[in-house]
Image 1 (cartoon, rainbow, N blue to C red):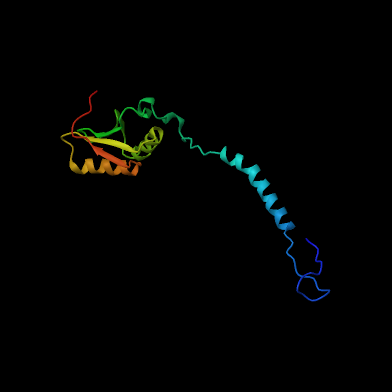
Image 2 (image 1 turned 30 degrees about the vertical axis):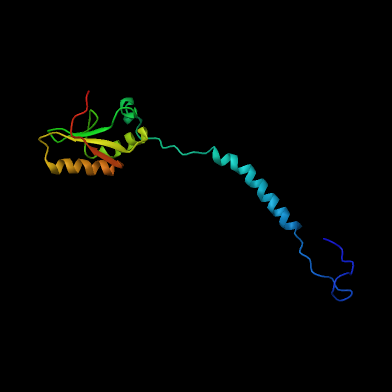
Length: 144
């Protein structure tokens, strides 16, 4: 807010309109303070998903990122995650939890020689439903 000393080109005795920015600056400073206070609290929040049934935890051998995750179908048509036989109804959910624990969505797929193609394709479809992004088909068995 300045004073008009009459040196302008307007009519005598008439004031020129001025913009008062003081309320705008006050509002911006209050918003700045609010954001400065809230920002550290937002960075400390995170979401965690706890399984419903604590008895079905992922074994440590499956959570180890060094060992490859192998989904296989044995000659009887049973689907296995590494060495554990998993029923078809529980397979997608179990695989989702194993992949989440590993942090990697790549699996290796192996089917026994006597398994029908339809059963092997069904197992790969279930693996896709379980969250597998990359399915590598094995041509040779992994060394124990």
